Image 1 (cartoon, rainbow, N blue to C red):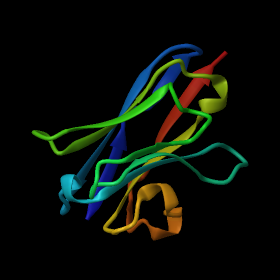
Image 2: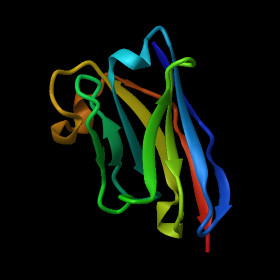
Image 3: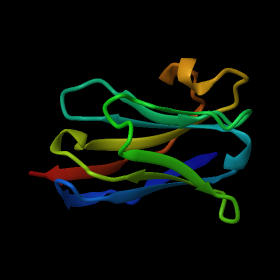
Image 4: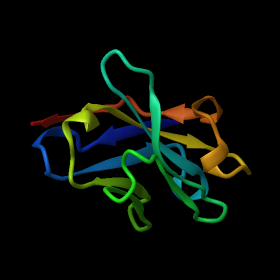
Length: 125
């Protein structure tokens, strides 16, 4: 299984980016997806996730109302739409998958099975 996160880049504060997560050897439509980020010198944190079992989504308070998780069924691709970006959103963003019966809002990052290599998002002020 390989995950690929892409779509990062340099954007000005207030701008938007859409991250994509693609997989080989795995059908994303069948698993829980998590988006995480790690800023320099900080621990990796959960940004958003979607529980495949019931479609419930979770957003960290810091991104709620600005980020949206979605998917393209035809492409089996997951997206993280990021709007109104702030300099504090600067980080390497990762997508991860989990085959779990639990809601993603209660899952820790250690319960995710596969991780993409990360894509860098830089928001300038």
